[in-house]
Length: 205
Image (cartoon, rainbow, N blue to C red; front, side, top):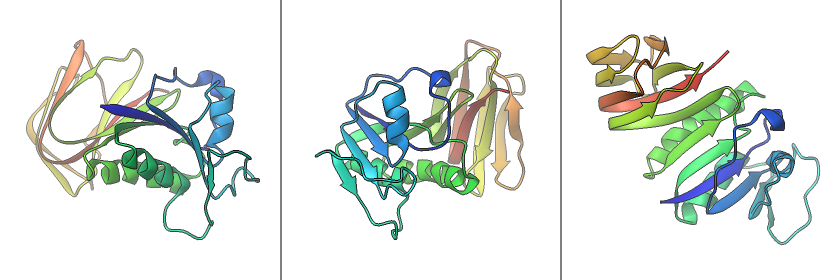
């Protein structure tokens, strides 16, 4: 499985970010180049309309786009990673900042799942991904809540094991936050989804 790390431009403190993993591809979306530089990462490609950065960086690895486009800069980078054969995409600097962009980034997780890829959004206080059906295990993370939200109208036949509030063959609705602020008690939690897209979120205060 090829892995990409994508840096976006949300205002975050570089020193608080979790360690950047090894990856096959490092990409920057617009002002994400600042975060990459602060973390000591040399990007393979820098993309975007650069309205947030304020200037177009120099270099052969830079691709500039018009600001009048349908894709966000981070989605442009995600599409590039997919075209390069990456199926696991980890995003830094994609949480916080403008709420509309943060919601767009959460929606992007479904875009990636539609293309058989996993997206993960991380910062110092969150780890977020999307589970499309099936069974997956999630490790206990000290001091972090474990929250689950329906991204489709319904998530059916949901079973939660190893958590403070277990569930057996339940239903999650996108109109009621049943899964907020659970906690993993076992070494790992097991989440089974019969049908639907479930947003999986670790969060801490």
